[in-house]
Image 1: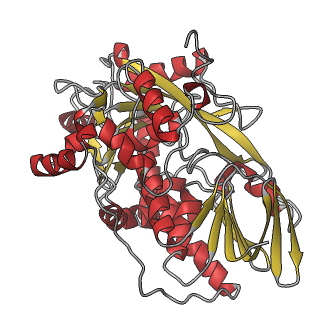
Image 2: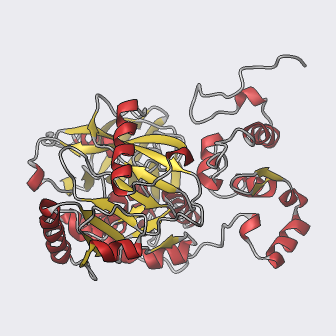
Image 3: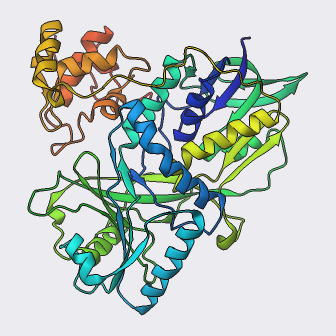
Length: 483
């Protein structure tokens, strides 16, 4: 049984962010993840918005971590070559009650430390976004709202952690945990591991895992959000800001956001569901998203929708809404947990990771900095996004860069071969999709999927019917018709 200084349970954005920060020190760290890849829980179904901090309750951990985490992303993305942009946001109001909501949001934002907040007229909001409804009376402008790719972010953070010595173990379920002398024995379905310290960032499973070391006091239930994804935005009709609205009736927190890759994202809904596996979209849910989108942007073209998806987040149920907050705490000696981390969890992750490491230090973890920590990653741009000089050099190294596989996202065979040989490579079609956006474009994989299966079959030395979409049992190919 191998012993580690720290075992992190869960490889979502908070788990991987904590792992990267721990990789700065002389520590032996293992990240255990039950899914086949990083970021397969709430992180995968994230809106990609870096929130400004005017939504959470004043001076709450959620609010402070949102503002502070947002400010840290500029340097993180610069080091890790992750594209992001502070595009700003407009929180719009259609009526007097909504205007009062804007004032409340502005007050919350200021108390949380958000900067540059300004309430503007509906006319000025339409100057910034001409497609906005003529019925909008006022808007709260927040310049620090940003957009980022959740996929590129978590992969870069995990890759950086791995390059700096952090081990990752996927498709492994934690089934038990006990304290033995000064260490914890972590029982999994692939073996036992020992660690002096535990970090519990298991998302939907964080509360059950914490209950192994202390009495449960939080009830955490699944809450689903459904989204529409639109094709790349045309030049004549382009939304440049993230747009929210002061809710009426039961409209939920539906937003409209440009993505860093050029698409438009609309959603989510906010629905209680039976389990964390209820990640399907529904007719009623998507109808709701469409109705809110048309209210804010009357001329939005629903014919440009290319796909839809849903994500499920962990929602604390037994705490009053006005008192609800992120929970980051010492669960037991040498054991730190994060519970109820939902929006703006991705934005808050850098701050929360620092908080968790400070709690570990408080519990006695020795933090001696490495001399050889590598903070920066090289560029991971696809071949066709690179300079002509770079393209010529790459093509000389491997002519496969000249073979376009995914036409929508402009991905070549050379790009695929590159990521297959990088740290933490994909193990399935969805893993490749997460790394290169293959299959995410207008045709949703109709053109490229057969070619990708052929490439993966060749490179992994397996038959096409062994290539998985995601996890066990998700083969695309049933078998051969003829040989």
